[in-house]
Image (cartoon, one colour):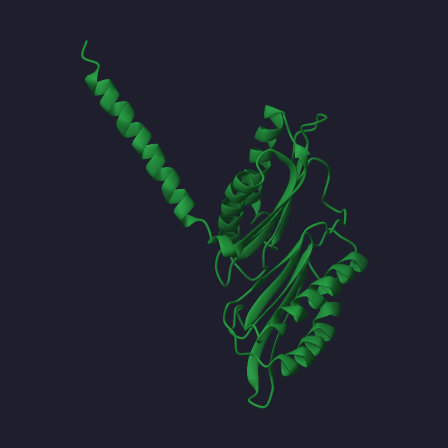
Length: 262
């Protein structure tokens, strides 16, 4: 029997797999748009790995059911050493399909940056409009306030007036914080657009918390996020930035990034 066709088939198959993997990697966000944080030790159970995959897949497939709010949690496994609880937070104004796409990309990033870790979180910016926070742990993390991971993103673009921007930050957060903390219909989110400075330059703000924590914890999370965001433009006036944590985020930009009708 001539084995040459079999070898050629196997070679073609392997090349196809490599090509597909490269396509997946090419679709991932740029490194400067991804911040991963890993916690605890390594899991050693194949069952935990399977439950983790199932939980992350479940997040992306069910984010729009029964109604999209930008927040979703799921759990897989029940035996000791196998429990996985995963949560996601996306902006409520984007489509469920865009949030699902962000979750899928984040799952790949978590596996790449935090292989075999029992607890991890990734903050992913897919585009100016779409972003998400995906987190998992080997215990019931939903409902437990634990701001162990914090980070910030900032635009390389400069040109904002620092002094004028500071006062605008404080006023914006004072106006938005109460709305974001109290929330409605399972969504803790607030947005604001305003003008500032002598030129009346437009600027846009958003705040969001996960709805599973208490109002006091949301308030505490946003307090940190607000201060973190206020510090971003100190260095030569950054034009946009985000402060993120395991339970909330704050964002500003001189370019509009949320729909007017939301």
